[in-house]
Length: 220
Image (cartoon, rainbow, N blue to C red; front, side, top):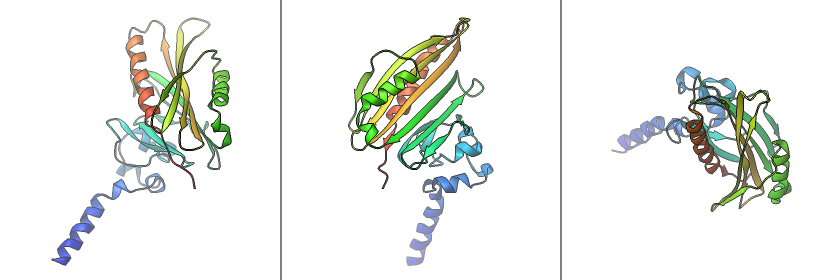
């Protein structure tokens, strides 16, 4: 009887093993044994994946290399290795995106993690963000139990008037630690695109899903 129990526990451990794999384990796995999506098939992007299990349909769990936060990550988004920057466990900048071969619209997005005293004054971080995107306006403030989100939108039209970039941007500030993530989400469309309005509505929903999913982890 005891032997059967031990064997059962061992089998359950093997079956559930993929749920306890860490980033290093996943990064070193054979891509043939991983989900057939860009998040796992791209060598660099795979380094940020924290689990083989979907968080929800089409999204996996991203974990910052600082260990400072996690969030949902689109399954076919590719990380820009050339943009990536990290300083210890207190700063990290990432950028990823998709084109219309894997998504309904073309976009790229950035997330910048900060930890330390500079995050205690969100207004200063928002000023820096506004300056970087040439924005002169207010932010909508959304309060949650564990974080506060500052959110704004704007549109940039090219000089030729043929393309426009709709930008969603803001800041996610932890209520329990000196941590924050600033973000920009840029949707690029042709001005004669008949799907423009529906794409923009979908993008807005995606942005809110991503930033609401951010969970901060205290670095020891």
